[in-house]
Length: 190
Image 1 (cartoon, rainbow, N blue to C red):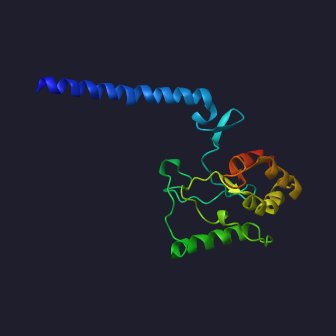
Image 2 (image 1 turned 120 degrees about the horizontal axis):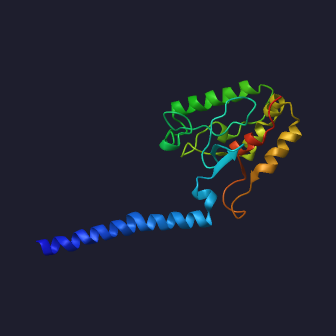
């Protein structure tokens, strides 16, 4: 019995060291060398302080800021420890009520805006953590942000264009903009 147990224990310890310690350390080291910013969480720093990550959405509700995609995470919005979607279908009454409330909030924040509201401003994503919105969603908010910041709409559009990200390799994904980076680029309100 002991002759069979010893190789099993040694194999267990050896595999634990290789797979549980050596491999993760090697991958972390390589990631830090090759993709240091991403390996550190893609943190955004302003004035020497970490203000967020370019990978995790943040909630903005002030009319002075661009609003991101709604989050379905619980118990609070954009909770990175509880990434999840709402799992509500397009005909679910709760989903329809959520969308209606979001549409009303957008209209209340900018009553003169008669443009069609982009879907990503009223529906949560599968992860509930989207840090980006479509360019259409950003442009929809231009008049409100410009009015609240006492900027021209052209200035606000120029900021969106400056931070716009193209599809990966020109093929994958849609043009988009990171909401946190865009809001940080806005001048201080007057």
